[in-house]
Amino acid sequence: MKPYNILIVEDHPFQRMYLQHLLSELGEFNLECARDGNEALQRLQQRDFDFVLTDLLMPGMDGVQFIQRLAGLRCKPDLAIMSAASRRMLMAASLVAKNLGVDVIGLISKPVSPGALRSVTEQLRRKHQVAAQAAAAPIAEFDRQTLLQALNSRAFQAWFQPKKSLHSGRIVAAEALVRWMHPEQGVLLPGSFLPALKAFGMEERLLWLMLKQAMDAQARWREQGYDIPVSINLPTHLLNSHDLADRLLEFVLHHQGIPGKLCFELMESSTPEDLSNFYAGACRLRIKGFGLSQDDFGQGYSSYLSLVSAPFTELKIDRALVQGCHQNENMASALASIVALGRKLGLTVVAEGVETSQELALLRKIDCHQAQGFLISHAVSPDQFQQLLNLDGAATLY
Image 1 (spheres, rainbow, N blue to C red):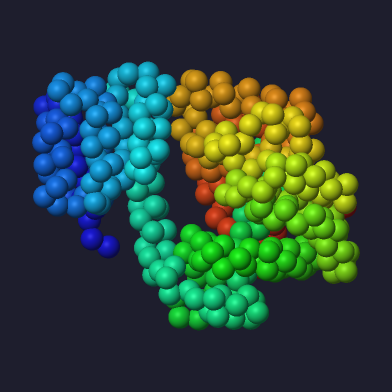
Image 2 (cartoon, rainbow, N blue to C red; image 1 turned 30 degrees about the vertical axis):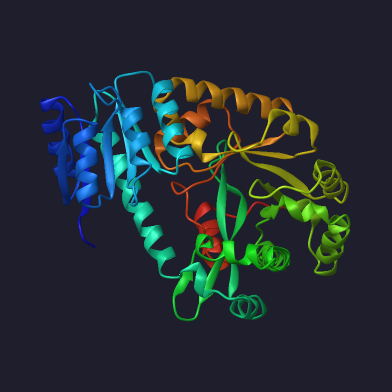
């Protein structure tokens, strides 16, 4: 893989040298520096960069203005923002970038530590690896017939990402995530094909497929003594079908599944035509005995009102609130409040996107129930998940 092109935007000469030195020790990068926002924009117009590391407080064009101008470029690099200002200032600047379509992969408080830069460069590598896989399968090439064939041939497979108890340290649940075993392009991640499935109205077909495979995996794990609840993503617009809960229960019972061991995560990527359909669907899924999870809490339009008004059994805290929480006192306080609220409401609280041992330690300290993320494991096939269970220790009788 060719070295990443990185642009450092920093007005202080010593800081520029220091950052160049740290980055050169962390990997083989093509490094360039700019003294201010104007010079940085000139360099960005001359060539493409993979990543920009910018200060927030600079004379002339400040970091926020630079981000606004950066968002207008044809090729938007990934961004990390550094500053001696408060973490809330950094968070606000990152929201400016995110809402303008710029990916922010790090917020760094000054003085910049080697560990903080290492974390950002690792995030950069992971992001580009995922992007390279997704780029291998452009959405445009997946026509309706290709997707139907993949659904009918079970080329779409449920892989499972474990959720670990922060009390016992053991795997106690899993989330089913779809992967496409493409005959020519290998394992494809959802970002490369889900938009096409949605465009062709095939999300419900995928739901049934994922549900069946999740129950099949649960049955195999149960034979080995492991009773693992599984969460499955449910686009909320499917709740417009008033009999969905009935059909789901009939399907599960027909295949000897256990409703209480299945939890539907309500995804925020779509909304019902009428909000009453959301509440009706949520109530009827719980009446049928299924678990119900508020997904991505803390981002998008999820609200405290829906959390306390709908009959959820699980609260999943969005990764945006988890990543870097140990470095941000305000974020840590917000997390502690959300965990306390979830516990008071009798919900199982799960933190998504856990990537560092420091994040895990903080979540354990504030008494979060479960954690999920790359630090624990990527999503794996059912057989590989069985191996993780075996490594976890002897099965607990159920």
